[in-house]
Amino acid sequence: MKKPSQIAIDGPAASGKTTVGKLLADRLGFLFFDTGVMYRLATLHALKKLGQVDDEAAVTALTREMDISLRTNEQTGETEALLFGQLVNGQLHSPEVDKQVSVVAAYSGVRAALTEQQRRIGLLGDVVMVGRDIGTVVMPDAALKFFLLASPEERARRRSQENQAKGIDSDYVEILRDILRRDELDSTRTIAPLRPAEDAILIDTDQKAPEAVVAEMFSHITQALTA
Ligand code: DC
Image (cartoon, rainbow, N blue to C red; front, side, top):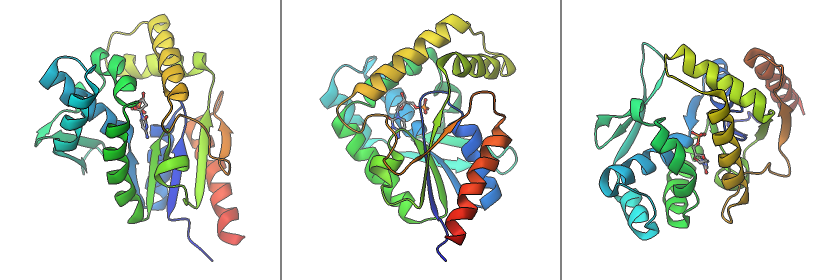
């Protein structure tokens, strides 16, 4: 009986991948790895150095040389991201990074550099990895692949609630517009576009609490274990 040691979760912006992925990883005692953080770090680094992200060759070179590390804060359980040793979590969801990250994520050299690092982490096993191309490109042999779906309105509602809880000013219409824009960019790019792998299990998360989604995932994990 094979233990599903690599679990891929993909889906569009704000579809609940992080919340659900963290819960699932906690229950399984697996590492939770959010690959979106890496694309956000590459974007932040480029913005700091260049003030823009339009120069593909320069952004790619900066991504290759950037020194990043991710660690779990033992007290809060949060993933902490360090760029050249500096904690930058607070800057990863700034409006500027939100606006530019899909542009950076479409650069082939950026994807090649980050995908290689993600694959290495995936090979260690016992990992729940979340992103856009985990089931299709990063871990195509993952034992289980989930693809989360939710309507754009539901996703915008969740994101504005999250922002409010964090005390961040947020405008529902603006968030909805940004989500639709990012979905379009992420799913129409040529390299590793956002799409479910052929063997992915689609889960519609509209009207479902994160625990209910995790329960649904668990029933698939149990089936995989007993198959
Ligand atoms: O999940 P997120 O919103 O933090 O992701 C930020 C951006 O990074 C998103 O616009 C798409 C991109 N991304 C990607 O292209 N591939 C991944 N595996 C993860 C994220």
